[in-house]
Amino acid sequence: MAIEKTFSIIKPNAVKKNVIGKIITHFEDNDLKIAASQLINLDRPKAEEFYAEHKERPFFGELVDFMTSGPIMIMCLSGEDAVAKNRNIMGATNPAEADEGTLRKLYGDSLGENAVHGSDSPASADRELALFFSTKEICNA
Ligand code: ADP
Ligand code: MG
Image (tube, rainbow, N blue to C red; front, side, top):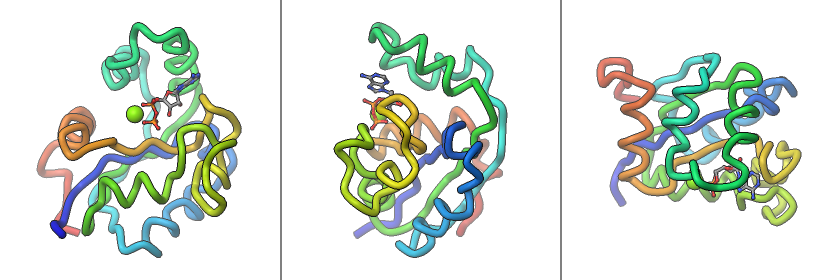
């Protein structure tokens, strides 16, 4: 399997719960490395651009409100099969349906406030990483 890079966000509800370290431990325990990271406040235009695929959905406004409600931790994760592996570590979109031990089960509060984001494909990872990091900010981890 190839080494991939994927884009990860620790969402505002999880940052507020002070579980950044606990979440990163799940990545490290699964052999994903942090190749870039930053704590940022997302502004509305950037949140709307990031979630553009959902702009016609009824929850779009609420999603942008939530993602701009407090600091988020953005990361590039690197490792074997990183895109799919991160999605497995995260669990289902709805924390109520996520498997035991997954990040969304452990730290998600609701379908909207589900603690973490992870790219859903290598193409999404490329788009999302380019939105937030320059190539020189991504290290060979
Ligand atoms: P995922 O984050 O698992 O890739 P989606 O791309 O479908 O899920 O949705 C993006 C984000 O939008 C979700 O992580 C969640 O925060 C929010 N979301 C998705 N569906 C709903 C919904 N029906 N109501 C409220 N928020 C939602
Ligand atoms: Mg998605």
